[in-house]
Length: 461
Ligand code: PMP
Image (cartoon, rainbow, N blue to C red; front, side, top):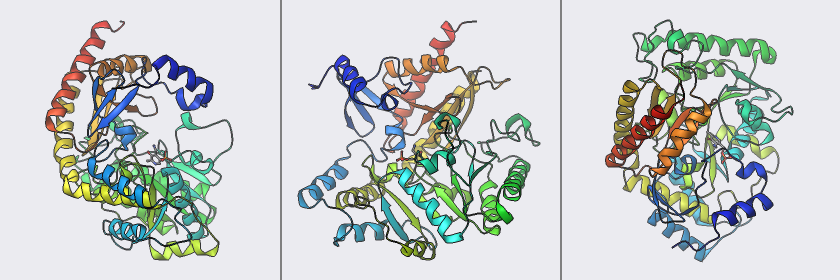
């Protein structure tokens, strides 16, 4: 039973005491007062239940308040909370051993931090120290965080202030199979099967990939002194940018190019890690690459604030040139939680479930795409899914924000919580806790159909 302040009281308190930027997001017309969560479900203050397809922005990996994770946190909280530095305690040692067992190659050394932004900031510092090069490359439409450095790397202008940010950061053209300059209807192999992902005739020598790698080489040639670069950041599937998957060979070739120019390759696995893509534990594995640095957050703690950078001993050494520490990164409670999350992923077979339920979800959404002109594209892997809404399929014009909101509001009224993103805000983002079932998918599809039908009936001509 909810006994907290009313919605009106909450609105008053927030508008008086919180930065407007923290509560002014264009979310639902009628905001939700969320009260409780359990596995894939959340309840609002009136007791209404919702199926959560967004998991606190891809954060709740194994289920809201998963009993095993809660028990681990509680037990550790009764025993010891402390800063990471100064003394030794075994929770950290045990956790990093367990985490690195999940990593390929030489990726065996961990630095624990508290958020995705901190992890990416540290990765950028490491890339610069290791290579002696300041220049860093990112992809347009990528999201990596909001620290001053990362604002420049996050290549979505909606997240930028009118201030210089990200010195030495350059963005290359985003290999977006649906909207990219060589993607979708512009692809030489058109119709590009994009995400149905580039398994077109030339799957192993995608001509669009050629063009995008050429562009990357241009950036290196024109923007980076002597063509040398510190590194490149990528999300193996872009999250905030609207669940964008790259043409299949792009990452392999981009990583090779970056290494030829002296740089290190950084995979931001903040959204794609921990089994979410189903087929693999890490998103980069789906591209057949091994990065030099991997950053992770969100799902690592099932919603508990913790994050990590994993790299090779060789790269990690660079940080020893000065004192560098993080008060809370890898604190005992975070490590107990992280360790329980890894166990639960294993025990509850989350990765296999992501593959099974996620593939089913994508197939069912594809039926919506085939039956509605305003569903432009359905893409993703496992439970990292995007459904891009358009004015009509032929023009691919993004569905207007107010139209998106209409559909979105109906899904919420019908008990379904979905994310949205993409530069134009026209992509429904579906990244639920990995415990959802096929029956939940059927329910979601039913809700989407009702919401889209309702919108189309009332759509202004
Ligand atoms: N990288 C990616 C891919 C993200 O999606 C996010 C958060 N949306 C971040 C980094 C930043 O994480 P945080 O908000 O924890 O700083």
